[in-house]
Length: 231
Image 1 (tube, rainbow, N blue to C red):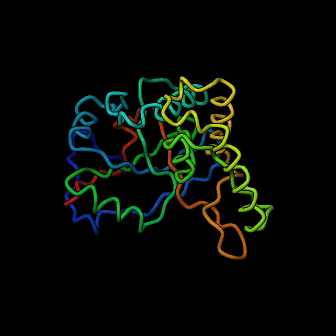
Image 2: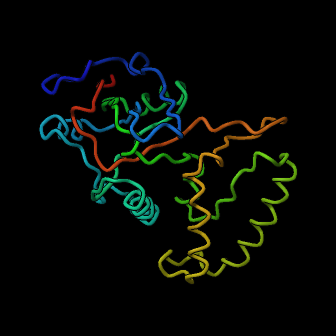
């Protein structure tokens, strides 16, 4: 049943509020619909109820990570058929434990579940996204390599990159030498590649990624399937 536009969110204790964790298939047909969850402030939810639309805005970006958000925004503009000034962040795949941990942190706010067309959503690896946030080279996992071989390759690549970019530490990314900046940003493309989505190595094989985030330019009220105020 769709969330009625005049309805208020249900009030539930945070530990009873979490629905099934989403698990979006990255290769889902572009015409398919996907279920997603997002934690939003009461103010944001009221904006959604009153206007029918919740859009992201650069004014909410954390200043320390504005470069990373700007890069993600440009990728969305290139990859999605929609447009907008900002981003709405959601969980596309995660664990129930992670949702519960988030619900505890967001007590007093609203957990919103939405169903959106797959083509309006950009999926990315949550853990590897931190390479973008921290302006570090993303050295992708390799399912075909045993962990010791991959770790040795990682160490070599990291040391070589650190030596070449040591003079850039205090510079804005826009001020980096262009070849280095382009090489760095090319490495970040892996966060969108499902073949590179691994979580860890368990001693025998690579573990598939469990935490996938989603970004979209906006969500509309008619896409909301559930809304819960977290006590």
